[in-house]
Image 1 (tube, rainbow, N blue to C red):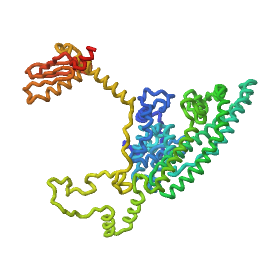
Image 2: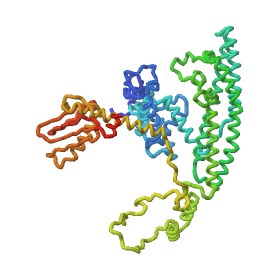
Image 3: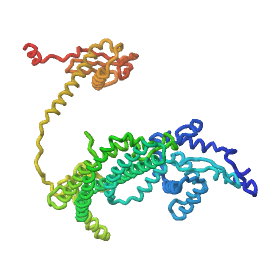
Length: 566
């Protein structure tokens, strides 16, 4: 029977229990990283996905069809408990295709099925089945397979949409949250005292449950306010670090940053410092009763054990909140880091102002002049552009006043833009002057570095002496002895020198270590195989005889003899 021929004129209910979809089960199990028969019924795919597999949730953002994937994910995350089929997704994509938000042909059912299956493989969607009413087998196949969005995919899409909406400018710091956090921590102490008092009378009564709910409300509010405050501070200072380190700031930019630093940052830092002391005192008071606080905020039994809880329900959450406001040994708080970052930003702005106002300071580039020149090029016609180009860069036709040299490194067939690049010094680039500036820096005496280098050299000499002595001791038994890695390295070094001295493959060669009086001789011999074992492997020389001679000792110099006599 053809797949798209109607079964009857009336519609037939195709039940999923009679037609299980093995492919959907396999896809669902593949998201979890196991086979379909190994996945427990109560285990979520996110619990078995490792870090590498979780990063695949971002794969659709870099795919060539990312506009289609974004439209599909926005469709699934736009409502709660989205349960859509390929036909329903295709109908939504058809409207986006007419508006030009997705490429043409992306709303085709077969293309939509491919996109949905790919999202299932990446872990963004979960495939399932349900009972459906269909008039043909094709309609049943398209309508019975349903797709739901995974939990982590919702977070990814939410962050993506938030990122696309963020403007490029500075983010306002929510400094009004500081007094709210201060009052909230004080309210947590009062709510905790009331909850403990009510619990002593009757822990299962309704007043005790209401007191715990008020305590949970205070804790959740404080941690949400702190999360928003910390995020705005990080984003603001990230923007600040991006702009104040730029060179060649325009005068209006310098004026704007001056107002930003002098006025706005001053208000932010003052508000943070004004409330830090009272917030630190409240956190210190709650530190002694933290265990009772966490006990009253215990997890709800209805959600099970493996549940992602709200902030403020673990010791790590409270420690993170405390570290943001309070310094600890070896770990400065975020408040101290904020003060330090503000000082660095003001210093960077002052340096930019100094570069812009001083006439002889070093600057990385002549940005203002280049922008002015670019403006001239933009408004010039073809003839004027050639004249400006010749006047600005001095690139005229060649005039040979002397005979051409015997060898010319320039290739007349290579355009100047593709030819070799000449490095321009900072002095020429910033001032147009080739004269030397400043004075030669002095060579500083560093005895600690000198002693370190001498100790390293002594250790290297000792290791080489030990390796040469090992080679000398095993000179007559190279085939039976197992050399160390250092001894094999010395042997390979001398062997390379000996083989390099040979004029042909039938000649013999020799190499001498004049310091340790060790000689290595290599000569050819047909059918002879020399094998040298070491900790790093086995060296095999075919049709070659290797001879090692010498005692490996350092010859005594007259200074050594006189030293021994003394």
